[in-house]
Amino acid sequence: MKKKIMIFIGIIIVLVLGFNLKNRIAINKIKKKVMFDYVIAYPQEEFKIIYGPTYNMSFGSTNIRYRMLMSSKRLEDLGYYNGFQVNMEDTDSPIDTRNYKWKLDYLDIYTPLKREAKEIFGENIIFEIDGIFTTAMHRNIKNRIGNDMSRDKKTGLGMVIFTAFVEDLDKEMENIDVWKEKMYKLGKRYWEYYNVTGALQLYIYDREVLKNYDLISSSLGLVTIKDNKIKDILNKIKKNEEIPKEEESYLLDRM
Image (tube, rainbow, N blue to C red; front, top):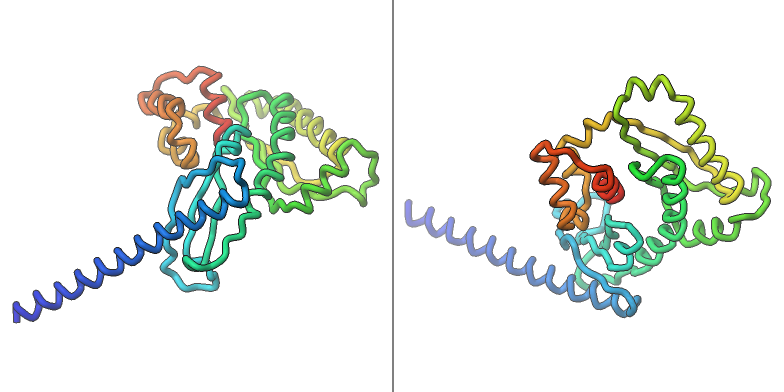
């Protein structure tokens, strides 16, 4: 009986090792294929794989089996640290490399908007645009900038979200009109100059939130978490040390 059990266990181990080896071979093949395709499509870029590929074991409605996260020096130089996702069905399926171009198009709009938001709200904010962004949207917005357009000709931008951190939340709530004026000023700029529509949302938190190590570290992307300066800031937070405003701004800029 024991001999049969040992043979059964041995068969399971061999099957598991065989599957893992096959999966590793497939993953290595994907890495080479993806990197090759992106370098061919964008020869001037410096790409790197920051996560994956991982294999999706579920067989739901999606046909995506492999997922990986990539970044480039250009994205990071533009202040974008979340990378872009690459999806594929199998090792032989074609790769749509346009998602990198779409990300650059997005940043062409996102970067000046973020800069203008910081001019109004200050450096220590988190700025996000939540919504689908395509090449067509990018072209529409670029063609509308600076023009005098009627309401019905303005294009949608998506949800624009601001997150600010203050010393005394109760006091800021008493001066909420100041925040409303800032929101109005930025919204007016988007409406009149960029000719875009979209909801603006503002979240205000007590600065004490930034002392929560688990919360902050889990809010950072895989590119950011490897940054030595970020590591030093996180180490200070973990030790409950005071974070200078310039380091706080550096941290928030990467969330």
